[in-house]
Length: 125
Image 1 (cartoon, rainbow, N blue to C red):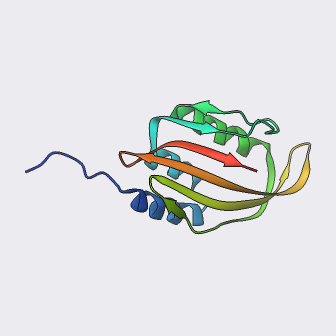
Image 2 (image 1 turned 90 degrees about the vertical axis):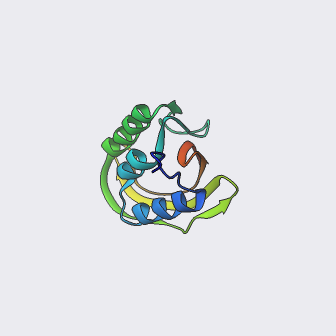
Image 3 (image 1 turned 135 degrees about the horizontal axis):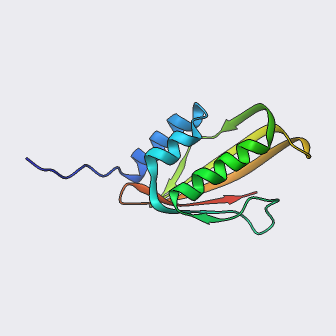
């Protein structure tokens, strides 16, 4: 009997991400699917969010983002597009932010998968 765990394919990772994103379970995506040494890359013009490396730093970045949201009015996530070991999602959020008022933000998020885990996420907005 094999003691090796089955490694998820990029398609399986995309399917699981899509399922969790549609339920707004961002934290669970990070916990289940991110590699411990994953990196998260923000655009140079990002208004406060910085690029980080490591699952714990990515979780903290998510918590920091949630802390600036005064009120969540809605959001959406498109279906994943897969190319090789990359997954792309179009997504948007309508929220009121501390000190910035209500804003709609739309972005493309691209994820790189290696050995069944997300090793990089990069945001374009």
